[in-house]
Length: 193
Image 1 (cartoon, helix red, strand yellow):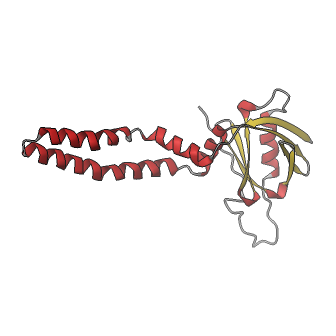
Image 2 (spheres, one colour; image 1 turned 180 degrees about the vertical axis):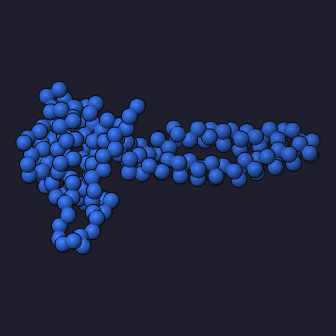
């Protein structure tokens, strides 16, 4: 058996991996962001009410301009979150990758650097947004996006089939052998549109 895949990893692939590994991160960050907006909004409201009670409309306008406009600018959270996430991931330029899947494991070549992953180091995989994410030992990942596969690559489904065959952990030992942990079991999740 020998399968060959040539593809490109882009910043979008790393963002998708972050979403896969941290599915609740966006919701938690959004909740905290809006929670921090409550105090300035409340202070602005009290300041405007106090200014209006003192018949000082100019000061009320000043409070709205100084506090209200910056708060309104921070309300669309999704764009701010993506911008912060892109900055935290750094400037990942598109990377050309060649992956060979053989009987002994996976051979990856990135910009002339070759690495080898034996099947025993493949922990699990998931198909998420038309991309195969292969979790490896030492918290490493192989990311194979279907959209950027070269025409000369083998079929996407063949890689899924091989991963299903190779990542199933068998029981070893006697009758008291424990069920493999969730991390050891392969995970296949296919998102449907």
